Amino acid sequence: MSIFSKYEGLASALSAVTAGGGRNPFNVVIEKPISSTVGLIEGRETLLFGTNNYLGLSQSPAAIEAAVEAAKAYGVGTTGSRIANGTQGLHRQLEERLCAFFRRRHCMVFSTGYQANLGTISALAGKDDYLLLDADSHASIYDGSRLGHAQVIRFRHNDADDLHKRLRRLEGTPGAKLVVVEGIYSMMGDVVPMKEFAAVKRETGAWLLADEAHSVGVMGEHGRGVAEADGVEDDVDFVVGTFSKSLGTVGGYCVSNHAGLDLIRLCSRPYMFTASLPPEVIAATMAALTELENRPELRVRLMDNARRLHAGLQAAGLRTGPQASPVVSVILDDVAVAVAFWNRLLDLGVYVNLSLPPATPDQHPLLRTSVMATHTPEQIDRAVEIFAVVAGEMGINRAA
Amino acid sequence: MSETVASVSALIVKTLLANPKVPRDINGSSKIVEDLAFDSLAVMNFVMEIEDTLDVSVPLDRLADIRTIDDLAACIVSLKQAS
Image 1 (cartoon, rainbow over the protein chains, first blue to last red):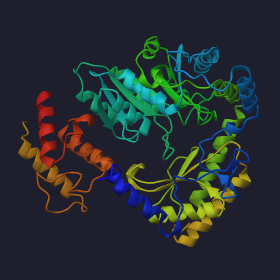
Image 2 (image 1 turned 60 degrees about the vertical axis):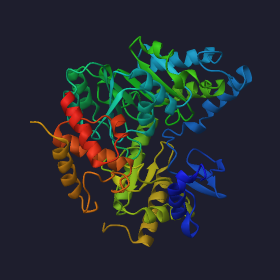
Image 3 (image 1 turned 180 degrees about the horizontal axis):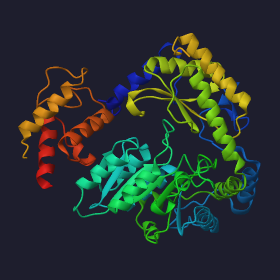
Image 4 (image 1 turned 180 degrees about the vertical axis):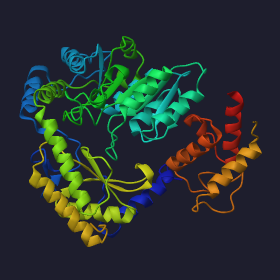
């Protein structure tokens, strides 16, 4: 028996997706980014509507310059973990910069956003504690819960009353209760009602961790995310995030006012047992952070673009989520139709993410798009036009 | 009110049968994943429904040991007794 025989179901699902000459959606190669919004795919210039690069900063000239200078000055890697030889002056500078940006006293930087959730959640919630997770949490949150030893309880998506009910059931049980929510949920782009969750946290004495991976740089007057936008930053004990969305690089962080966060450095395995971020990434991240702070107009443009894309797709007779946010997903009913639709979009020069159940809420396949501040109105209109053409070809646009 | 494994199992079967996609011949010894063709997400969502009906929370790590409807019923009864 092959060691891979347990994956026969996966193999046949992949065969079904690629039947009839369709592409493997998990193996698309962007041969070269031409700009933040256009990439070369299969030799063709393709509009990028699925990169999470919300402010377009992956191609920021200032960040690129900073990376080049840092590589020249410091080399290209640290060859060590944060607790051994992998902490350089730049790591400390970045942590201080993030403390200043978030107005928090403590910060830990991780090598990826995935590891930030893994390392923070698994270390904060110990054996005798309870983790309360939104049902639609990202895989990194679920994986963090598996790496730790806390009891894990799910509550209904974005439903603070349901969380309250589940916390009430735990009344009188020993152990800390850590609630985990996301600012913007990555599949449908829906925003957490943070004020409502903050009220439940205050009433029940639970701890609150917000993963603002998709909302930092996007929401709030200063770009600090949904907690800032809702005026409840003091109620959020821990903010976790990533550099690989609005900051355009790679890495993750956790910020907090709790001094205990520094103890996590001594017990968080995803922090301790992996190589730290290389100098050029840190320098580029700090340059991107400066841009995020100094160019609030990027956030205005981003939300204008989000509304334009959301309205355009709805006008084309496609079903989307209710909120206009930088993640706009077209909801379909049938996996085969979603796969064919996604392939045709790429044929016609638009790249989006194909998201299939069970990785999506409610078992619906999604054509997940993400918009950028750097998209022009013409690029958005062109993408919407191509969506409409394909929907027409496939006979799935609802009567407008 | 004191639930028994049999009464909770019967309630789970009744709740499952409300879903037209579930096979009609299920009983307490039916395997949740194999016999009902539920994936991991479907199992978690279904358990949430049962939790609300019985006002109990089933931690995810407990789900890992559950194969049959009766296993789930026994787990819920033990959680209710513990609380």
